[in-house]
Length: 419
Image 1 (cartoon, helix red, strand yellow):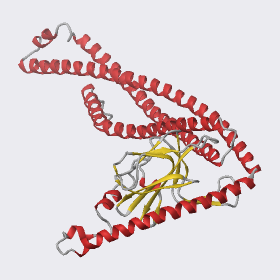
Image 2 (tube, helix red, strand yellow):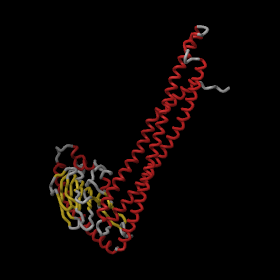
Image 3 (cartoon, one colour):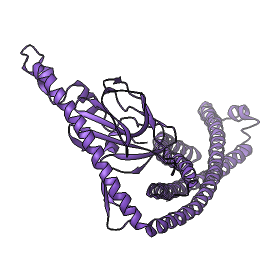
Image 4 (tube, helix red, strand yellow):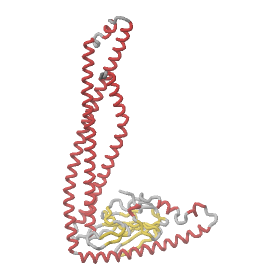
């Protein structure tokens, strides 16, 4: 025989289910919010980078000279915009999933509300027939005996409590349903906005891809000039590298000479002699790996560290001992960490460059047109070292930045904090 669920049992079950949902909701909400926030942060970061690179490209477009650097900047812009479009699609997918969850919850709430209202109506009709609403005490007092009177009183109390709880549950369910419906409408508006932005970004991407192809065709028409420029650049890089290595070699010899008496001093503390290759300034610098501030306030990396194919000439490769950062005309170069200036030098192709020592580590800042420091100066983190050179023909402002450990090149991107 099928057991009929009483209104009180159903109410208890609903309250228990809502309690479980309530306990899990904060964790689910926090997880979903974190995922959405991560996507939003990524989108805003890419939008900021694209807007900045747009400004740099607008300046270089005023020059009639087409350069490899201009091509590299538009290439980076294309990559950033493609990543932005992908992020927008991920956000739309997230919204779709969130709306699907809310739709399911809204449908369940609608069903629950309908059943609650029907059940509440049945109880009210039954109470009306029993005249519990208007003559409740008469109902109790008209009992045949004390036991029946007590049972009727308990039933009446249970009925009133149930009515109160049922009315509150209906009101809460209506409120939750309305909240879900409102959230769905907001999500739909967000999705529409994201889709419109994705369309706009796709159209802009098509224009940039067209510009990239046009620049590449123009550059390849003048391949002989590019090869000649590449040979000159390699020779300039060699001169710069030799000059840097010579200054670092002298600084290293001086450091080792100064460390020798301390190492032979029997009264020196064990901590000081524990790792003579990594003194206090070196340890401080090493501890900031991946967290060093950028040497410019704003900028875009247009050439990464290491050996890679030439961007426009097939079959040729280029090697970069550091990274090249495109920035605004008149930009100041900033020390990434405290240290001592061990070298200031001028090479016609690289203009001024500054070398700062941080124990066994060195940072190099090249292509400066003016200086604010001299050899022997102690500098602090974020201190302006000079102004970066702007090419008057191409209107490009570019800093060459290197990180060394003793006499070895390191990848600066690994040391700088992620933007």
